[in-house]
Length: 193
Image 1 (tube, helix red, strand yellow):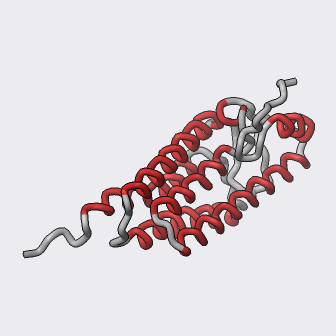
Image 2 (image 1 turned 30 degrees about the vertical axis):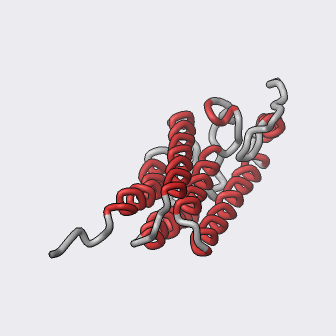
């Protein structure tokens, strides 16, 4: 008697978890400015989300035992990651934000939506998504994937900050930087200028 080739649980959990990383590629393509010279940033993002995110989650989750606590923690983190991502994405829509590592800057410093609290909510959402994978499927492999991607997006944020610091927006960005955390809100935000 043949049955479904994969156990229903955790397939119904792992498959959508893995697809969330692919969603970052699709939604990002509709959000961020890309020029023909942005192959590096585009390639790195696609490797991160497609290979280490989507395929990594599906590979690590294939026939994995996912305890309920891990599924709840991973699911909650992924929902938080997607919520933050969409909030940030809708805030910056049509503001000419560029793909990572491009060296290009938007026309103005965005201080609305999640950007009122942190300077890099999009990168923060990516890091939270990889934390979701680690929480759901804890292993040395998922830890390595998390650390690789956390380092990758911290580097992207620092690269963006260097570009902004060298641009016409440097004074505005410097003031904004003093009021906000990179990925985590300051516990005591200074009053806006």
